[in-house]
Image 1: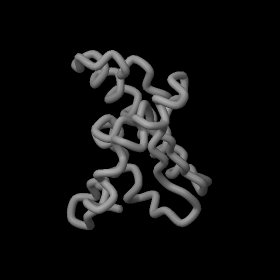
Image 2 (image 1 turned 60 degrees about the vertical axis):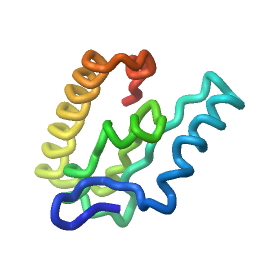
Image 3 (image 1 turned 30 degrees about the vertical axis):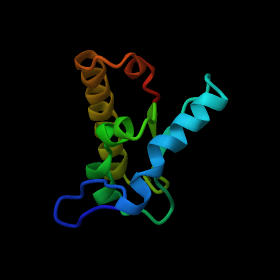
Length: 110
């Protein structure tokens, strides 16, 4: 779910309203549960995928982390890019947790 011009990850407006209540309901039922936003899969375009990972989107909808499925990272270039993505992702999550007043940010999952 990205816009082709920016590769920005987005949730369709008809589904966006249910995400906060979905994660809140799960957390109410099981407070120790961590909810993760899953991105990727076997048919994903991994050139685009690395531009789509969004900590902000996960936080907006009440997820405690992101789950990236990069199934076909099997070339040297793919593996290098995946390593860079994870490094940038970790740095962004740390920065976001430091700069946020939300205590849940300390639980970002990798």
